[in-house]
Image 1 (cartoon, helix red, strand yellow):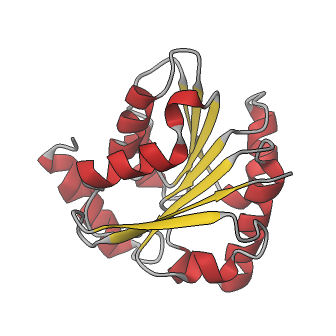
Image 2 (cartoon, helix red, strand yellow):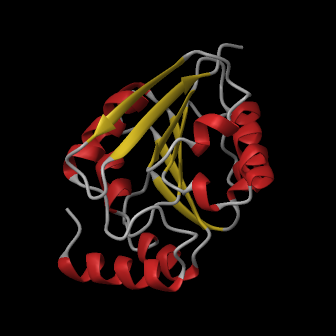
Image 3 (cartoon, rainbow, N blue to C red):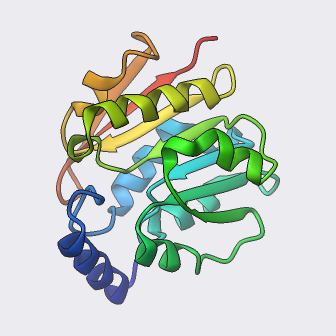
Length: 189
């Protein structure tokens, strides 16, 4: 669970950069469990987290992953990247950069196609063309059968996602502030 200082720091980053963060406070434990279940993290070998924020979701993901799995987080916000970089686990790599460059970032760290990409970045506040490009990049980089999980306030990610087809589920986690929808798509090819 994120400490009070992490929550305050997260809130100040939201005030400074409201378009980069999807919430004013870190994710609840209930939301983390829902994401972990939808992502199938226990069976994943390579996981990519887009927008790790203060690192609370990152720590929960690492606990759910196998000892051999790898987790790469990509954070655009410099201050949050610094905070997420404080997560210490040999399976974890934090990267400061733009998620639309996922292919280059995976190559940089010698990682194969991810089994899961989890995104907490707010598609509702980004330029629609950039959002669509990001989803296309995720679809291209995922391993066959891989999952793209996005937890969001509104349905913009679903409207932009013309790359995965109709193989999706959507659930709502009401025990989070704000309540969020959790989408999960599977790459069929």
